[in-house]
Image (cartoon, rainbow, N blue to C red; front, top):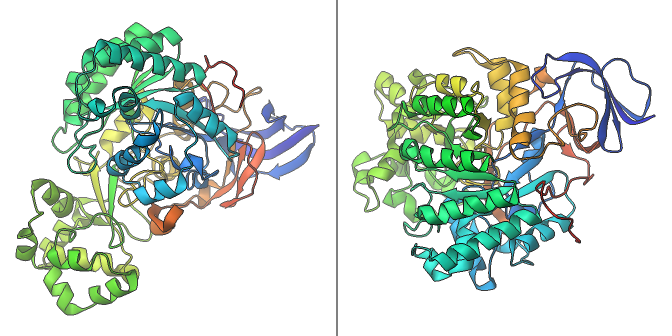
Length: 577
C-alpha cells in the first residue's frame, strides 16, 4: 500500500516529456510509482482535472535572514515552491564575526531592501563560520527545503576586516584564507559561491559590497577552490551593460572547473541588443560542453510604486518628505486634500528638490514605462496604456495621472514600472531567452526588495502568462515551462534527487487547478518581525503542495506539516547537528 495516491491528474513530470493522465503513488517521502491505475493508498487525493507537477525549485532568493525565523519562507510556499537556494548576489550572513553582524545587516538592507529592523529583530545569531550557519539552519523545522551559497561580501570581510570593506586589494595570505573558508563551507554543504560586480548594488551612502572590485587573483583563487572540492555553482551578478566583457573569464572558470557558472542575463534600456550577443556566446559554450548559464527572469524586473512603498514619482518632493513619516491614516487624509495634490503634482517644485538627479529622474519620471498594475495584474502592458500615452491623449500632466493611479483603492493603488527586460515594450526578448538550452530560470528574488519589487510570484506567473494567458505574442509549452523550473534548476545546483515525478525522486509535488490559477495583485503588508513592511503576493489555484509526500499547503493555507530541511551539497561530509 502506498502512503499517498494522487488520483487521475494530468501529470507533467518535469522532464519535458508530454503530459499524460494517471495516478502518482508515494511511499516513504518518495515517488514510488507513476501512471496507470495504482493500488490504494492510506491517503488518497483526487486530482482529476488538475495538473500534477514537481514542486518548483527556485534558485535565486534572498531568504538568508528569513530562513532563521520563518519555516514557510512566505510567500514562496504560496506559489508551489518546495526548494530554494539563497546566498545570491554576494550578500548573506555567514561567515561573520560578532562585531560585524550589524554591518552585514546594513549591507543586506541597502543591496536587497530588507529592513534592517526586521533583520535585527528576526535573526537569532548562533554561528560564526559558514558550516556553523548551515548547522543552525538544519536545526530549525521548516516546510520546504533550503540550500545556501557562500556570499563574497561576508567572506571577504570575515577574512580581511575593514580592509575588505574599503576594497583594499587582497594579499596572497588573504586569498589563502578565503580559499580555506570556501573549501570548508563547500565541504559542509554550501551549494556554491556568489559575488556581485554591479554598481546597482549599494548600501548606506553610495558604498559597494565587498568583492565588487575584487582582482582576478582573488576571484580565480576562489573558483579553483570549488574545483578542488568538486561541487558548487559560481553565481555572479554583473554590471549588466558590461556583461559581454565579463563573459570570457566566467566561461574560463566554467571550462576549467567543469562546474556550473551562472550570470544574470538581463536587457537594460541602455544595452538593448546585448542579450542577443550573449546568447550567441552561450550557443558556442553549449556546443563546446562548457557549463555556463544565463540566469533569466520570466518577466521584467518590475518596480512597484505605492504610497506605502519605497519608491513612487513624488518621493523626492519636499511636501512628500514632510509627511512621509506620518501614520498611514493621517498621510492618506492629507493625500486626499486637493491643495496637497496640487502641490505634489507641481513638476517645477519637484525638479527643484535638492535630491533630484538623473538617477532619481529615471527611477521616478520614466512615464513612458509606467502603467497602472490593476486588479488583474498585467506584466506585459502595451505602450498605449503608459502614463505618458494617457497624458498625451487626455491633456493632463503625467504627475496628475500618476497621483490618481496611486489614490485608487483608498490610496493603495500600484504603478508598475518594468525597468529591466522591457526595452521593446513587450516580452519578445524573454520569449527567446526562455527557450535557450543554456539559460536557467532565476532572478525571482524571494525575500528581497521588500518595498518596491515583488517577483517572488514568478513560478506561478510562468504558467498563467507564458502557458495560458499571453496575448501579445506566442506562448510556450506547458511541459517546457515546468521542466525549466524543476528538473533544470535542480540539476544545475546538484539537487538531483528532485525536480522529476519519477520513482525514487523526492515526492515534492504541486496539484494545480490550472483553469483557476491566478495571481491577485500584490499588496503592502506589515507582517515581518518588528512590524516590518513588505510587498506580498499570493496565488489562487494551488489545490495542494506536498513536500516529501506531506501536504504543506492546501488551498492556499499552511497545514502545519514541516517535512523540509537543509539541502547540503553532494560532496558534503555527514554532519552531527
